[in-house]
Length: 416
Picture 1 (cartoon, helix red, strand yellow):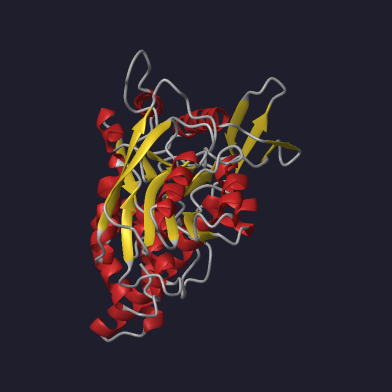
Picture 2 (cartoon, one colour):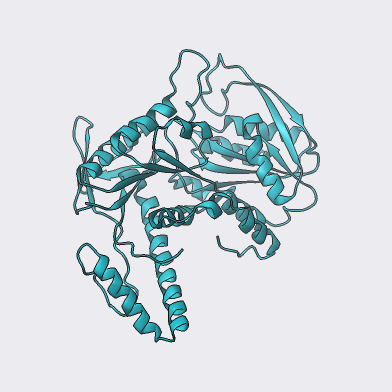
């Protein structure tokens, strides 16, 4: 991350995304600090100057370009930027939400963070009111907050939503709406310039916008790092299995990165039935293309909802003679009673571990022995910093090089 003044970078957290936003800000501060120290040291050597003098000159330039012509802090050292904009969210008795920004954001590059799948109580009315919000409630909170940001004169608005709302409603099979596209167009009409998300369910969603950009991040490095730290897993008897035809490309990437064979589960679905939970789903039949007998199986999918599809796949693989079954999930929703179903499946020996990300806020899930949580807030922080500075995202979007270095390093200590 190259250092540039982050004076115009602002982060606003919706109630559901407060924890995720705070972690992003922590990484932003560390990243800018490292970059400041690095560039000051390089310039000092290049021009034969004292490092403290160079740091002071950088701060002088930043002060000159600051809207207030003054950035608080010691002028001879790195000054921790102020990123988070205090925002008051009010919840009225009829369910309406209001967002009020407590500082000026005129001319700023604003990043609005929201976790639309957060199903834990969130705070309103200065902490006096707590309520569990649905996806629709969180989405409406995004709408009113974006409107407040635009009314306050922000230069640019980026929505940071690890889970893209309604992403599974991206294609028509009958008389139904393309809601994934409509949500994006509503955000675009409100003035959102860009969306940063994780493992979008369908890449075609981004093609439905007129001008708004979609940055689709992937947790593959973080998941593979966690996988590589499990004992006696990445051996010769290891196979990557795609859970369905829609996930082939994703699992092909993992198989190529790990240099392991790829197998495929083909599922016949009965679309006249609606998946209600992990037991009642619309899978009619499963077929296996490949060999899993006595092998460690690794399944990767973008999203886990009720968990019925994955549990049925795990059971089928064990029936085919698979050894350890491990899953990697980008968006671990665990809707409804999914956690309890996986508790029972773990007791029944259907799987060994499940690796998920902190893209969705969880508390009880983190207590499970079978669950491994990987943190992807640093990836989001790096993306925000690069976008703010107008730098390329290529190395973040195509991370095969750092995955290769990770696997080459037996300690697994490489950082992205």
